[in-house]
Length: 168
Image 1 (cartoon, rainbow, N blue to C red):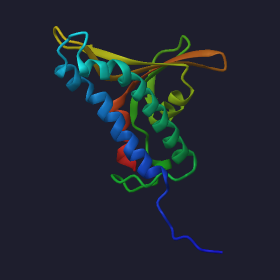
Image 2 (spheres, one colour):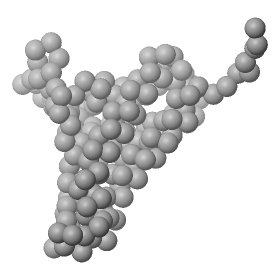
Image 3 (cartoon, one colour):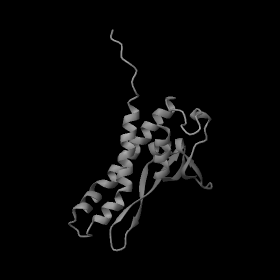
Image 4 (spheres, rainbow, N blue to C red):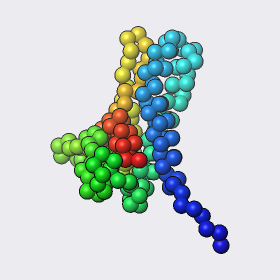
């Protein structure tokens, strides 16, 4: 039987590519809106309207699944800033969550991955340019339920992406 040399886990290259693509779609949205003429036949607007939210949703779910796989598999690396095992490091807040009638509380990174995977509805926040089209503003609202209790989470994509990249 042939031995295979040790290799990087497949998730690392995948997650870098997916995080980059997600950041490009979301934070490039304003640039495409600025290039748009506002005309119903504008080429940049057609790209945005037809693909932007669908692509961002796909990438966000893909990223959450891969990150959870790393977290749950014990493959999450050392924290490069503090050089301690991740299970001893406090997680960074990446948004907020409200469960049922409870007060809103901070949304931690791992829980954000869970909520992305189990969300029943994902909505992207929008901003607008004067006299121009709307664009993605980097916020995401997630809706779902757990054991009969509805929850709503607000995710700051810049913080989520930073947290993921910092640890890879």
